[in-house]
Length: 277
Ligand SMILES: [Zn+2]
Image (cartoon, rainbow, N blue to C red; front, side, top):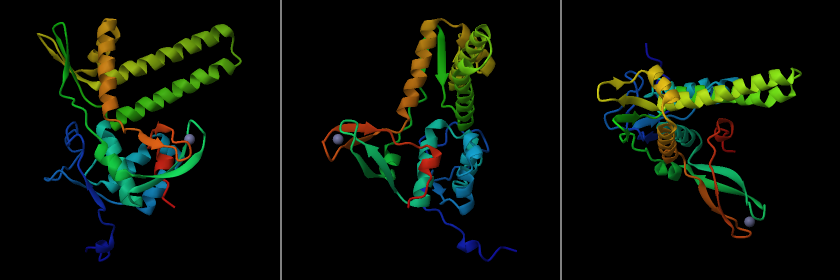
């Protein structure tokens, strides 16, 4: 029997097109509607509570649960390519609390603080997907790229957080200076490994005249052993693609001294999803 209350359940508030157009989603992780527009539902009370659990926030599971609840066409939110993430999160914020978002700002010139409002629909329209079809040619190699997915991003930031915390606490521990140096060197090396790992995951394949290599461990090995010039070229390419997909900072003018400045809009979960009062 169907629950007669079903018709009173929440309805989609808005529809979004993904910047990736559904590319880079493994089979079964996305049910792409034929018109390419995904319905976005407002958060339920349970979603809101999920978001306020600090541990869940830190390991990314809360974000995944809320995305799958509000954008049911996305079956596995860990698979979302980084270039779609801001679009999805902003859409959920709009669907849940409306398109106006208040934020505070401090003028860097005269330090006057003021309250502003941003129309999130404008932010949504301004998001662009960088072109991941381009590749790098280097001697007889062709290197192809892809965006990281949410799982990669989350693993990466957790590992970085752990190593950075280590780097902070090591100097204050009671171990000998020699042991401190060893521990610091190890933490720095691990930070470097995390960077290389994240670059390796951004490479979908490397074509040689004789082979197409897409095994992550081979690509990882290659990055650790290729010459510096190529490594830097790959790193710059990945950084450029990443920057192109990021939210542009807001351009603000101080009402007191007229100073013009930019402020990044934070999608930090705790503040971004605090309900509009
Ligand atoms: Zn000012």
